[in-house]
Image 1 (tube, rainbow, N blue to C red):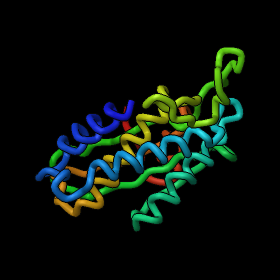
Image 2 (image 1 turned 135 degrees about the horizontal axis):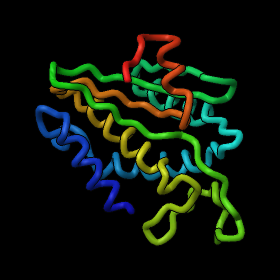
Image 3 (image 1 turned 90 degrees about the vertical axis):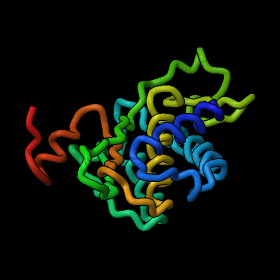
Amino acid sequence: MLKTIRCSLTISILLVAAQHVGAQVDLGALQDEAVGWLQEYIRINTINPPGNEIRGAEFFARLFEAEGIEYEIAESAPGRGNIWARLEGGDRPGIVLLHHIDVVPADERYWDNDPLSGELRDGYIYGRGALDTKTSGILHLATFLALHRSGIPLNRDVVFMAKRIVGLRRSITEKHVPING
């Protein structure tokens, strides 16, 4: 899993950077940060029902605040939060780095450890959402932060978005602009 994180980071960054970000950002250190973030993110209970995705949104908000990145949080219902942030870039079509925050309940009979432990064992991180889709969210976050930290001009806007499975469309259209389709 740790090798997968580093490879995925590199590929994602190359898709949007005009120059190689790896020359500007220590990807090894970023990988270490990503492992810690993933463990922390898995420990946040976003099991649906009831969801409590606002907890996940607040996790990302703390990281964005520490980096000086503007973001927005919207709740489509109490506790059902979404978050998004944007890095401005060139005129090529934008990219959205999107994952869902909520996870399905775990049947603890089939787990060797606490499903919300985020345990790192033998190079793998275990916990609810480690495959669907909290790892994707952390890869998106690490890519987004690498681009931000590098200061390299982007050839397109990059939007980070973490959402609950349903409700994002309503949150955005009520606060912002209509979405077609």
